Length: 152
Picture 1 (cartoon, rainbow, N blue to C red):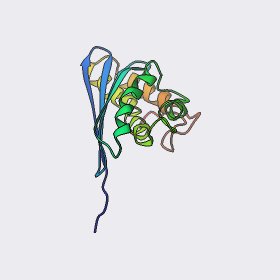
Picture 2: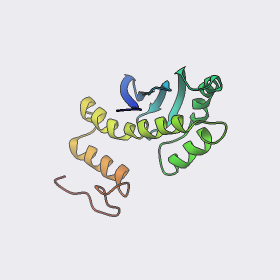
Picture 3: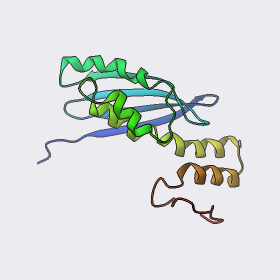
């Protein structure tokens, strides 16, 4: 018998030149939250954010709607995770909001490669170089200090 299920849904759209809108919803028996953030595509940086608390376990949780703006101006680069935790976590924050940001915003980097291919802004080789530079040392598939592979 299933007692608990949680769903995250992430949509990234391109509605304005150079800017993605990232929408992340979290739905479970206790929560219905929608986080929307605008992020620059080149050198990804958070421009603005909002949170809708539709359902939450406590009435105080509605106060969380003010927190996303604490991330305005924050770049998505080294130290991003620690910054998000320090600004949105702890006794005045919400671990679920932290998780929503950390599961959704890093996808801007991957989505940028699709955007570049779609718009023709960069060649396939240039996109490979951008991907390599952004991801080097981030995970097993992109070992640090490894030259760009010709066939990836």
